[in-house]
Image (tube, rainbow, N blue to C red; front, side, top):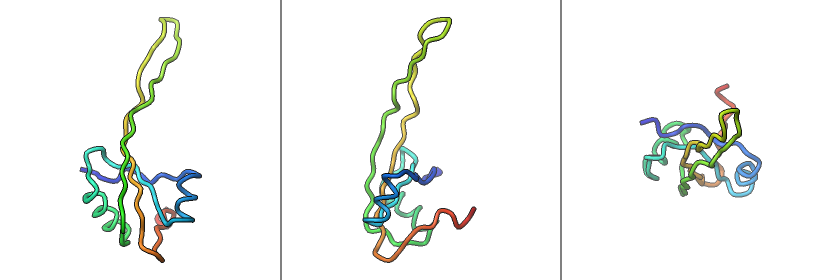
Length: 96
């Protein structure tokens, strides 16, 4: 199971990173906090103090076409916010 999907880089997450040393990742919906912590520590070589997770339902989407209204749902996902020990950072741009 691929636990980490991708890091989330938004303005809100950037503020959390600067103030509270927190980072956000989109993760597999079946992963638990222990698996997420292990995957991030193995990939980035950091020490994690806390893991918070949130599950999001996909938004309802609809559009009008020639055949009528088409409705559907965006994909659901799980987000994990991790807190690192003081003095540690994750550099997402080092392997580009």
